[in-house]
Length: 423
Image (tube, rainbow, N blue to C red; front, side):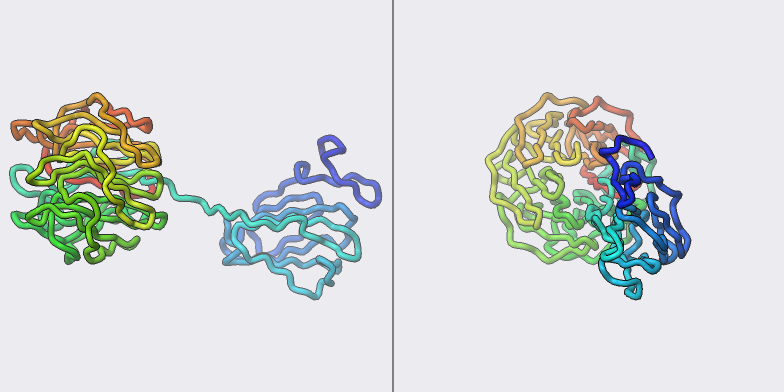
């Protein structure tokens, strides 16, 4: 025992008992039985089996023992307390005392023969471990001179892999987003005609075959994740004319039927999650009346707001991505030629003014979050129809890096999405 007397407890005999800070913590217990001793702390791991704990057969007031659910498994395999002839909270040891709540910590102090062992606390740590934000990304589909379904995986350091043989119908102007926490979905697009098919991506980056479409066939759609349980949303696009209808996506990747549109109908817009559980659609092309700088926020229940007055240069064919865990960036695009400007979005959904561009001016690229708190823009086309596979990484402060040499087939009108909890 160590520490000043003020930090310890007196037994009734006048002997000083170790307080929590002076407990002797024992190795992790995995056995099905334990004979506990006063003055000790025990990590109880019930991953493989329940555990019966026998308390000391004699005790003095002030004796203390702590038990902690080491692996958060008491809810599956409980601990049972045998008070070994002494009372437990005023009841004799014929009573069964189980603790069966995951994440619990039990601090027992002996108060004397009448009440016996008493929990000074039996708290539950209610904060379950939270999976990290998405760590990887995938680019898929697009136009190389013809429609394609190739994909390229992005690792947690922002490195793009070589081409992966395509799965699903080759098409351009798809839209991709994260769903279910660690998976992705690509939907809609153009094969020479508008389509409403979708392709799910598992948490290993494998693209599934086509899923029969739900909702109005269209291309040049925006998409974002939202909520706290892995939902997503596709909205806006071109059905032959611009539209503002939307389709919700469940946490299992099922696309719902059309929802009546809100906001200015448009296509070729940027979109991204922000604020941890919300999303934003911004900019885009209205067709006959040109480009917009208008934005529409998405609530954490998937409700699209009315138009927010535009900030920054109106443009189309840009891309958006999250960065810094709760913010977003809109960058590149086309207005009277390709652009490389950017607009940052705060964690409350406020779009900033134009920032000086970095990297090759282009449009039609894809963008996604990666590595927990960063973003990547890649591929696209330049004025004069030159296709590129150029990469620009975005750090967790929203700073766009200069061009990196591209990997994979140069293409435009591609899409990207985040996936995976693994580095």
